[in-house]
Length: 96
Image (cartoon, rainbow, N blue to C red):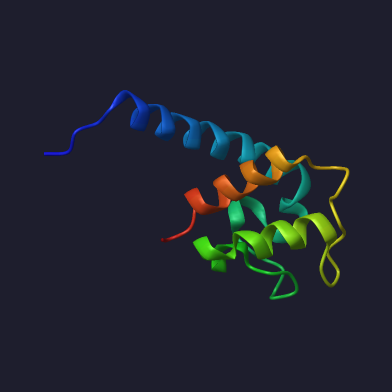
C-alpha cells in the first residue's frame, strides 16, 4: 500500500501545473520547429525533443538559453522558470 502524504500530493500537483504551463510555452515558442505536441515532423532537421533523457536537463537548458546549430538563443526571452516548465512538459510526455 502506498501512502500519499500532503507534501507528495502537492509535489505532483506542482509538476502537473508546470507541465501545463510548459505546454503553452512550447506551443508559442517551440512547436513551429519541433512539431505540434512534440511530434517532430521536420524530417530530422530539428532535434526530436522526445529523445531527451532525465539527465539531459543541463544540456537542454544550455541549448535553450544559448541556442544550438540553427536554433536561436532564448536567453532574455524565456525566464528560468519558463525553461523549467518547458522541461516539465517534455518530461511529462516522454516515455521514461
